[in-house]
Length: 196
Length: 196
DNA sequence: TCATCTGATCCAGGATGATGTATCATGGCT
DNA sequence: AGCCATGATACATCATCCTGGATCAGATGA
Image (cartoon, rainbow over all chains, first blue to last red; front, side, top):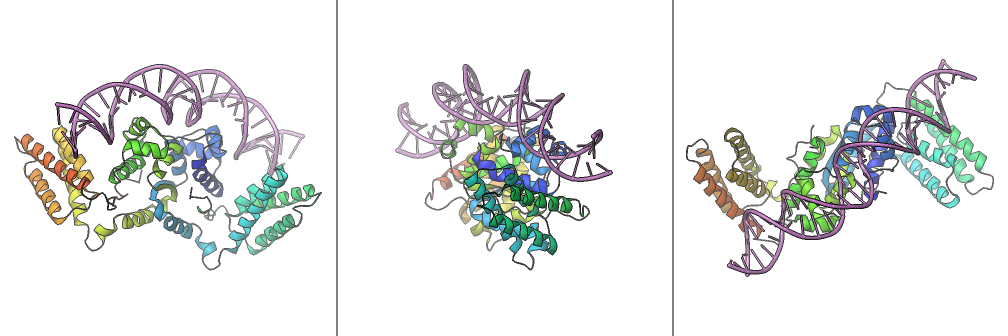
């Protein structure tokens, strides 16, 4: 319902997920209820300013006021240091790949209606995008996306989509539990459309 | 009442004032009520996230999520380009002068209790700080501040304070109506304490 | 002095944020 | 199969936002 704050809220959610913090854990740190956070993140209710500040502060973020003119500069600054390893030498080809895939899924949901599998695929892609994947892992993702593309208009695509969703899910789980010691985050703040 | 959002709200207010936008004008642009805005700015009520976004967008600002670590960098970026003319060759000596004066007034209010004149002086200083003053005008301000300093502990300081307040007020009025054509603003976003 | 503009304040009423507590389906782990 | 954690929902209750007026004192300019 609240169009203006969508971007900020979804950014917060993505960062929470990328930091592997559960809604319950966040609720304790922020002093809010888990149900509250769930409703905020799913867009079912609009937070008060201070609630949102509590939430983001608990995620080690600050809400700042920036002149519109400077938004691109700040965005660049944030993005640059958010994912230092991944973006240093390469031209983030993975990021583009994910972006294309996510667009594809979104389109398919529009055309053929959303299914549970498409939802899972979308969500998992959104998660994997934030993670540093090995070449092998990225190879797997590439194949899965290609398969998705190939069968996107197929008649009996359903079971295939289910399989793709499961594969992505498995990959997600493996990366999530792989190296909890490293500062896994590597999130980026850049995808929300900041421009109204 | 809402400690977390104080800083953001007062920033917004200062920018509104520096841009010479009235609460009513802002209320129309933002789609809120004037009474609403007044209550928000005076801390009598806590805005919803989207209300605050509407408000700041109408002031040509964006609310952004920034990793705490990057806050100083962003702050520097914003500050640097907020007052380009004033800070280019000089080491903003005027700014420091105002800062000292404001600290002085605040201290006096603590020690001797606040008076209407002190309040007026404080508010006017806060306004004048954001304005590009000519050398002559700055000279006047300097003298007034010096006078304030000199009589700060004097027994019969009251009439002198009144005089200082009036002088500052007059200066404020003259600058406010002087050049409505130029992009007077030159606000800065730096004074709120961003760190909790 | 009169007209105007500003920000603060009041009030009634409807909308909605926020809390607690509790339940539920899913998915992963053992 | 059982267990645990996750996120989504439900519901009652209370608090607060937010609107829509309207008014007010103060400062400014004509």
